[in-house]
Amino acid sequence: MQEEHQALKEPYSLEIILSTITTQKNNTAKKRLIFDQGPLSGIASKWVILFILSLPIMLYAGIFNPVMFEILGIAQAIIFFVVFLSMVMIIIVVSVFINNNKVLREVSSSWNTYFPNVDLKLALSSSATPYKDFFKHYNTALSKNLSGQTLQEELAENFATMEVENQALMNAIRANENKR
Image 1 (cartoon, rainbow, N blue to C red):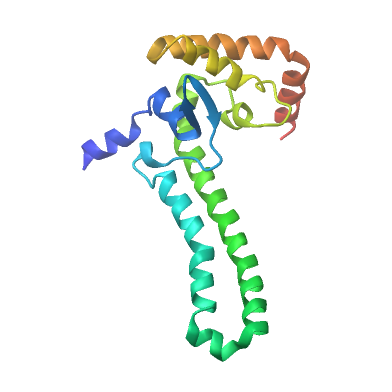
Image 2 (tube, rainbow, N blue to C red):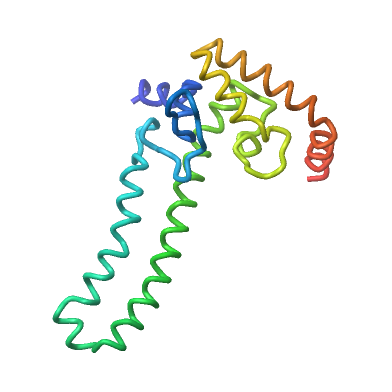
């Protein structure tokens, strides 16, 4: 029991953290739309995608099967399908939101051991942040085949460079943090 507890305390490796939030193909990394819990001993993103794709199919099969279709008729079946499909879309958005937040909560403490001054959410954000070029720098590191400690050092240098390049934005973020 204590060994399991100690295993939970150890931080995830940088490669595991990055594999949960990015897809890598031909030394090019892109942010995942649905983060992968697989490397964290959770549900792989493929299963989440399969669940998401199966919901409208199950809805269609449930409403347009011969028994229900005979009971409802064509007009009511279409109305039911549209109404329930909107509920399915809400379920999909909520499940992706919960999945991504769970992954971020799991890896944030490990991320902070590698980069204590860099907010992971800011690094992943697609809006104007000091770290908007994170994926460009990460792709450069991947093209150099860096891993482990060298990858961490390279990314730390890149984060420092991005903070210097966007000093005004960093100052505004820090001033806003102090107000909270």
